[in-house]
Image (tube, rainbow, N blue to C red; front, side):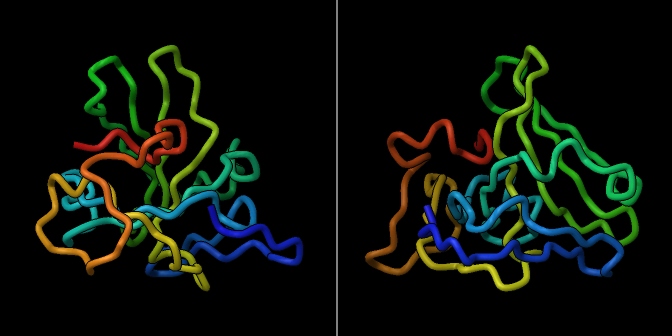
Length: 162
């Protein structure tokens, strides 16, 4: 978790074209993950995707003004239990902005994963490389990394990855 700074201010999340812009739900973030799963590779069009984890409160429920600018893609997860991932993107430019898990009973997770490259001024320090079992690039020696998730972080994880 990023260190708690009482003077920290919310950062701005912005899509590529600028049509969608909103503040992060809190400052600071809860965690930062560089995910190497095959789903993040596809979504990012790169070797991994970066997500900053925030509490969902403050962003959800989405305001009507924000929701009107967003599209939502829903996909199954690898949990095989009916858990879904709702993935929001800008309707104008297609930039993925954030995603959130929804349990089989319909209850959403208490966190939201906001794409790191869309957050102006994000502190990239302390990011953990996860799902290295699917990695297509090496990470620098000494970097914190895991084959799947770090022990004890199952409740914070931003998505069930493959």
